[in-house]
Structures are given as structure tokens and as C-alpha cells.
Length: 456
Image (cartoon, rainbow, N blue to C red; front, side, top):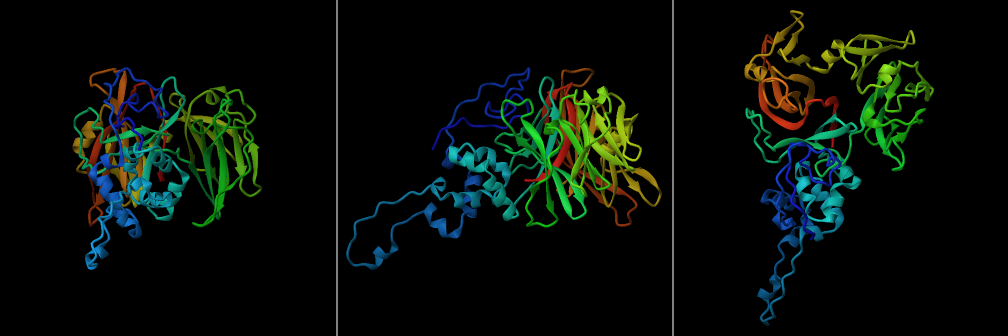
């Protein structure tokens, strides 16, 4: 066993262990030094050990509690007592360990990764990811992409401390039971791949591919495609015309064509935006949108009424590309912002700083969701960032200044899980906030770029 420093989840971005990718993002508030301790398998919380032992294959159960041979009791000759063997969980064959780890919640992985180097290696391995997929034990994971001042955009994932009963946290300080953890770290090892969409019988996704450390774009994009079907493998699609950095690029599908923009140098006028024809399997450059958009920070791409809308850090305006006319235009950003805070399950739902609403198809109007009065009051003074479908419920992401009463150097990012239920006569919708908590504190000048929900 190797003694490692105990890891405790923190909400401040500066509080993660120096081994995480975001350790360089130091906050003004320093965390108190943590006391070093020993982390071995036997020192883990009882619920983790019990769950692992319950999941161990039956033919290996005896290795956890070996005993002397029972046959000695049936032999008249007195045999000398045998020395007991102690077999630890981590000494089992790797395939057994992988099988056990794949069956438990990923929420336990941060602590398990401290047991030993071999555990840490297994938890970050592709083999464990494939085992979870094969056993159908993958879980929904929320990823958000944030731009912290003076840093490149980076991914964070929502982590919930296991065996916690989460409630509405009226206290503005972080609970440390939930947090947005940096990626990669011991909380989440892998950045999410971006699922672009389905075209005919084929699915397309874009993911980062690590390159040489000498390049200025260390995580350039590549596109993969596979025929519809669970057992069909992903294969590499034709390469883009220019290298792109994943967190800086956006993409989407419209009329069986895949549009990708940004993620390259602003001076790249010829191929800053390009489109992939899925029928001819070829890339083609799009017209130059202009220096303002090329120099801005891209947040999202949405397809609305046959046009491509690109949301960026440009204040108040949104760029739109019309494929039929082959030209760019500028429209009000309110249209795209409105789409981000809407979600559809049976009916349309919307959450804003004015409250939560549902669209009544019979009356053709938006109506207030009842039962969320206290939640609505808490959101006021902040800003709703996104509304996402999450594990059959809704997850609302919003931010608010850390301290009330005017400007403040920091903001708290909140996550709230809400259950919406329609009445039997479909005449009203009631909401229940299952939990609401601060998950990360960031400088107030940060940018929220986008979110994704993936199985992991």
C-alpha cells in the first residue's frame, strides 16, 4: 500500500489537490493546510468496503475471510494449526477488481483512487469505462464548460457525495456535499465527447484528441461516426480542414450537414467556419463571418428555423448564418438565451429570473409552475444559466453574487434538481425542489460557455 494525502472535495476552485488539472487556478481565499493521513483499503469508510465485498464474484468471496480447513475436525489425528492467510481486496486479479469497481457508484472513485497507485490507474483506465458500459452501470454525469479569467476554457463535472440526503441549502456557503469538480481529476478522468447528432442511419460525435506538447492546440478535434446500433464501432471520419481546440469550438447538424466553427486562430479567415456534407463525406469552407466573431469566445451553436445561430461573448448580439443565401447576419441575443433556458418533456418548460413556467397547449400561453415560490425568490437577483434534463428530472443551473448588496468579486454557481408534476386533468403543473446547493465559487467575471449530460 502507498500512503497518500487524504483528499477532501472542495467547492473553491483553488481547493483541489495539486495533482488535478485545475490546480493552477488559485483563488484569493487560501484553504487551511490539510493534515496528512494514511489511506489504505482497510481505512476506507465501511459503506465502501461493504459494497465492494458484496459485489465481489462469488468464487472469490472466501478470500476476504479465509479460515482453517474444516476437515481437521473429522480427523482423529491432531494436526498442527495452520497459519491463516490474509488476502486483501487489492491483491485480487485485476479483472476481478475491475468487475467490482464497475458495479459501484462513481461517487466513490475519488476516495478509492487514494488507496494505491494500481487502484488509481484502474479507476482512470478505459478498461473500467468499458466494463461499466458492458454491465449497464453507467450513470448520468453533468459537465459544464467554464472560462475562468486568465485561463483557457475548461470542463467541470457535477459530483455528489455518496449516501447524502440533499435538501434546500438556504445557507449561501458551500456544503461540500455537491460540487463542480475539474476535469480531469480524481472525480472525473475524462472530458466529455460532444454528440453532434444523427444523420440518416449514422451517428456523429466530436471529441478531443491529444497532440504533441509542443503545439499551441493540445486537444485538437476529430470527428467520429458509426452506423446506428449498439454493437457498431466508432470509426474516424474525414479530417477537418484546420486543427481546432475542443473547448473553443462549437458544432451542430442542419439538413444532413455538420457545421463546426471556432477553436482555431482568429486570423484563420479561410477555414474558421466549415461544413461537412455527410453524403459526399467532404468538408467545405464557409464565408468569413468577420473579425469580431472570430476574436470572441464561442458559447453555443443552435439550429433555429433552418439557420445556424452562434452565441458568443459579443454583448447583446448573436451571429446567424443562412445556408440558403450563404451569408452572415447579426440578430438580438435574446432569442438564443431564451432557447437555453427551455426544455421539453411532454410539454415545454422554462426557467428565468421571473420564475418557472410551462406552456399550456390548450390555452396557447405560458403559465406559472406552482409550489416554487421560495425557489423563485432565491433565484431573483441572480441569473438562470441553463435548464437541463437530468435523470428524469430537471436540473437548473444559475449564479448569484457571493454576498448580497451590489458588486462582489465572486459569484456562486448553484445547481437545483426540480421535479415537475402535472395534475390529473393537466390543468396545472406543480414543482418540488429536491435539493439546491452552491457547487462552485468563481470570479464574477467568469463566462459560462455550455453544458452537456453524458452517460459515464
